[in-house]
Amino acid sequence: MKLGTRHLLTLSELTPRELAALLRRASRLKSDLRSGRQHETLRRRSLVMVFQKPSTRTRVSFEIGMRQMGGHAVNLAASEMQLSRGETIEDTARTLSGYADCVMARVYEHEMIERLAAHSDIPVINGLSDMFHPCQILADLMTIKERKKKLDGLRIAWIGDGNNVCNSMIYGAALAGASVAVATPKRHAPDKDVVREARRDTEVVQTEDPNIAVKGADVVMTDTFSSIHNKGAGRAKAFLPRYQVNRKLMDKADQDAIFMHCLPAKRGQEVTADVIDGPQSAVWDEAENRLHAQKALLEALIHK
Ligand code: CP
Ligand code: NVA
Image 1: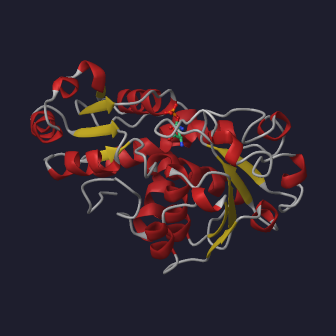
Image 2 (image 1 turned 120 degrees about the vertical axis):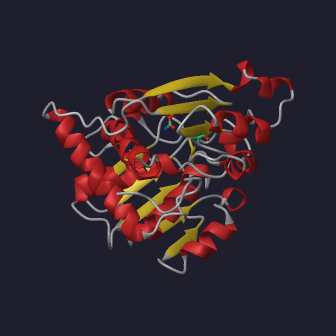
Image 3 (image 1 turned 90 degrees about the vertical axis):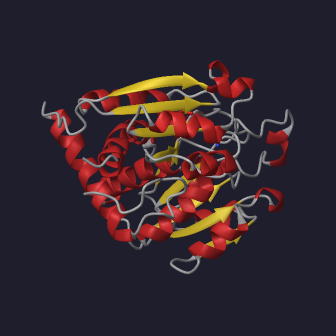
C-alpha cells in the first residue's frame, strides 16, 4: 500500500481503510519474518532519526526495521546537532530532505514536528511529541487485533494520565471503530479537540472514576504518570492511589480483558507488578509490534 498523505504526525491523517491496510501488512511482515522471509522493499533507502528525548523501543525498532527492509537509519541526538546551537528546525528540515528518504523525530513540542514536516520534502513521522504518539498506537491496534481478532466494536479503557499516548489512542480507536472510556483526574484529561474530533466517529466516555471506565472493557491501558515532557516530582500524587491499574480494577473489566502499557512502566505506580507481569498483560507483544507496524508504515510512506 502507498499512503496518499506524506507525513504521520498524529494518526488523524489516516483513513480507516489505510489503517486497516497498514495493520494487515504489519501482520504479514511479522509472520514472514518469523518464518525467515525478509522483504527488502526499502533497499538503499535511508531514515534519519532525530531524538530530543531518550528512547529505547522507538530508536531500536525503527533502526532494525529499516535494516531488515534493506535500508538503513542514521541516529541523531538533537543535543549533538546544530539544532542545539540555534540552527532552525526549518533549515534542518531542508538539509535532511537532501540526504534521506524519511525523517522520524521525537520532540518536546508538537509544534516542532509540524514545522519540521512543513519544510521537509520527505515524509516525517512523529516518534512522540508532547501531544501524540501515533506509532505506538499503530502497534497497539495491531496487538489488540491479534489478541481479540477484531477492533470494531471493542471497548478500550484508558486509566490515569490523559497524555500524548492517550490522545493518539483516542484517534486510533475512532479510526478502528472501537469505543473509548477515559478515566483521569479532571486536570489531566486528554486534549479537548482530540476528544471532540473522535466523537464524530466513535463513543468517547470521559469520567473521573476508573471503575466506570473499566466496566466490561476488552482492553485496559495506562501509561506513566510522569511523561518525559511533564516530569514534576510530585506528579504521581495527583493519580495515586485511585488511578493505579491493579488486580482489583482489572477484575472489573471483561474477564478476558488484556492489559496494555506502551512502556517504560513504573511498577507500583500506574500499574502493579501482578498485572503487568500477569497473564492478562500484552505488553511484550505490544513492544515487539512497534517493529512490524513501523515497517509497514515506512513502506507506505517511502514511495518507490
Ligand atoms: N513506548 C516507547 O515509545 O518507548 P521508548 O520511549 O523506549 O521509545
Ligand atoms: N507518555 C510517555 C510515553 C513514553 C513512551 C512520555 O511522553 O514520556
